[in-house]
Image 1 (tube, helix red, strand yellow):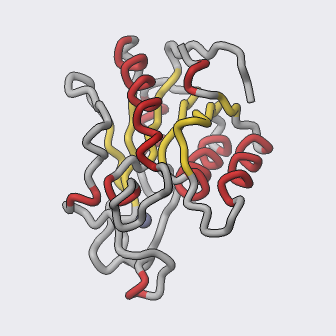
Image 2 (cartoon, rainbow, N blue to C red):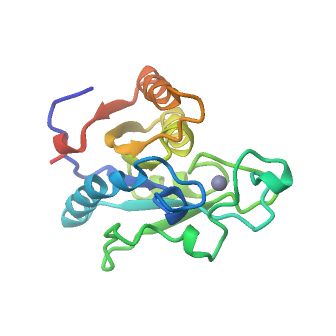
Length: 198
Ligand SMILES: [Zn+2]
């Protein structure tokens, strides 16, 4: 865990992972404490928008018969079906209306699941076009989509800062969230509380 101040500037982007109604308390695949990622992410959104730095928001965006759903033999209850309330971003997330937020949908293919915001999307291309080298990542869930987005980002050569107080884990197996943090740090991600970002 770093306690050094991290100061976003040119070359940095904020990546919000799947902050969608179905992953919040009351949603069909609710992550415990999932709503608690919203206030620290709002602080980061405000900071990045003030500095006119790019903000990306990934979202699960599934067809109704997606392979990851139980009815199709997958592990999850139906969630984030394209166009439904559950797939919408959390209403309390202050996505700035004046800034182009790049919404990256994943999991469109009925036959394929993807936990990474980079898999089957043009996130990497967008980031490259903007000259982004460092990603600040927070959202849901720590042990699935955040983990895989961070690992892919590192593989692609980005520096990655994980906003450790702005993620929450599903913890299907107790300790999954902690193991995910360990794995991200072990591969070179910097873990930082959002309060050190200023
Ligand atoms: Zn999904």
